[in-house]
Length: 228
Image (cartoon, rainbow, N blue to C red; front, side):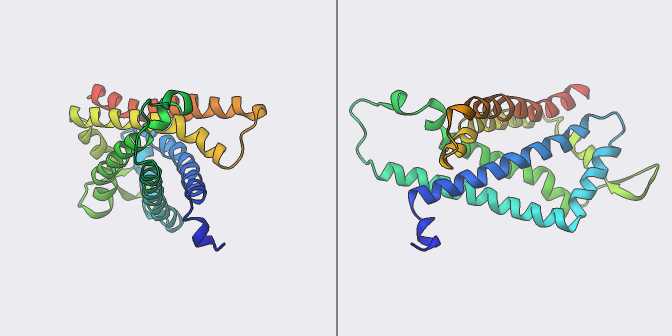
């Protein structure tokens, strides 16, 4: 079987969804660490320098564009897999056995993933698009020769809108539910499902990716809103 044929099968699609999902899990850790610099009391020096480096380094930009492709690929394959599974069972069970055959999180993956995708589009429009394609004020700092685009000020201005803060919190709830099931599911797809490691995988998937990381992201706009 050719690779193109294999990845068009159900198991092939699941492997692609799992691989792209784990790659995106590594990204959220780096992104959260960078975004926490918004809370430093340095008038935006650390965060703006970080944004300048991430926005103009050639290698980082190559990875960033690849990341956007991965997000789209992950979403499209996951949705196609969901629709294929539903089409394979056009008649619903007389008694829904969902609670016996799958977790609540797995049955909501398509909904939570769609909420998350909408959030990502809004997030990119609010920050990434303006940083790269709109006129932005700059700011100079001691020890840094060139003026930096003031993404720090844009972030604080954006999060004075309480509805955007609420939207970001909802987006992180979607991320939480998505990761609680998705992290563990990815390991199962790759056959890494053993009682010796399942406890660690569940702990990392639920408590770190499913709870701590979304809470960290959600706290940033909340703290910024309350600080102003």
